[in-house]
Amino acid sequence: MYTMNARDWIESHKNKLPAHELEWILEACLKLTRAEIYLDTQLVSEQGLGRAEHIVHQRIAGKSLQHLLGKTIFYGREFQVNDSTLIPRPETETLCEIALQRINNEPSDEIKVAELGLGTGCMAITILREDPRTSVYATEILPTAIDLAKVNALAHGVENRLQIFQVPQAIGFEGLLPLGPFHLIVSNPPYLDKNDPITAEVLKNEPHSALFPVSDDPMWFYENFLEYASRLLLPGGRGLLEVPHNRADAILARARKHDFYAAVYNDLFGRPRVLEVLV
Image (cartoon, rainbow, N blue to C red; front, side):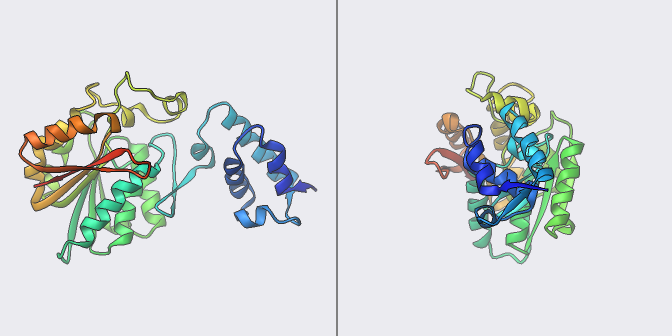
């Protein structure tokens, strides 16, 4: 039984959610492209609408859309997500873009990359897909996140070039020491402070272990990286870490105190977001 066309359904729900979210919901529930949604002849089934309505109600209640749909897009590719990982964000694509630029300039036939905090695997998998010379060694604390990253790696055909190691939550970059040295290290470490302005949606949906350092010190992972950087990286190697924009200057100053060349780059929204350290 068909009840209405897709475009009319979106129009009738714009008072509940933004149009782009409604489009994503129909794309997922009905396996339609965005162009197909707006065809006058595109009718939607009662069953499909029922699932879509259920997702709308959960979204209004504060559940993240990516978790409801079980997927998101990062660097133009689809990745599965669940509540054991951070939802990949556009800001992190800036880190990935800079990493790929540095890899592109690396003359080696084999490039060894490390990542602390694998999560969905979106960054490691993107690097592996974009440059066949790379191999990635990644640490992660949650078994459920490791399982998810393996699914994503398999879906993108890079499972043989990604090695994943589970580590305790209290372990930082020193967990990568037995696996190095590396040409490049990337990470979006837990960096929030309990006093930072954080939306209720983020606190409700995303794992606190990926948001807050176990020590409750938002600078801990950066100090930890700077302590081990010279032992983890090959001569001329680089570390690229996502940083909170409100503490970027302080983190940059600490990196320079360690006598490293260091710089901070802005994200797509013009905010300081990526720390680069050259050994």
